[in-house]
Length: 121
View 1 (tube, rainbow, N blue to C red):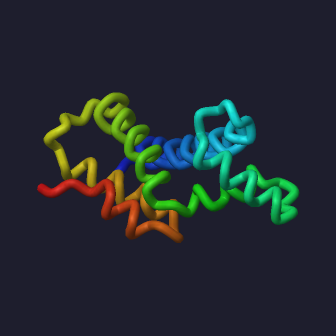
View 2: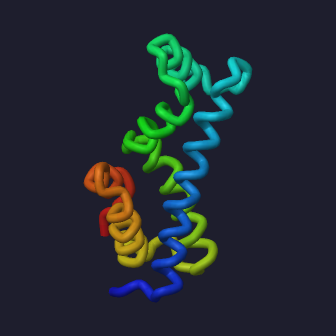
């Protein structure tokens, strides 16, 4: 099973969505009232160490956390595969091909993303 060029483009849009979401989470967490207490604490710790763009540094760390990436990517991928592409939920073949394509866009955490998102047939 192969994805069309449009579907592959949709996968890259999911990756871009994850990049933006993580960046927004980190920069929003600069405020102690953001609700992202754990992320805010990490930013404060980086600032104490003299890191200028502490929120950016934390965003980079978050982007390498498989759990964070998998949660965001999985939610958006679900919308794309089962919403935009209108693939029935039970069709694990298309889902798994999409997951593998998406995981390939995250080389450092590729296997973890696959492990989190692949479905058994």
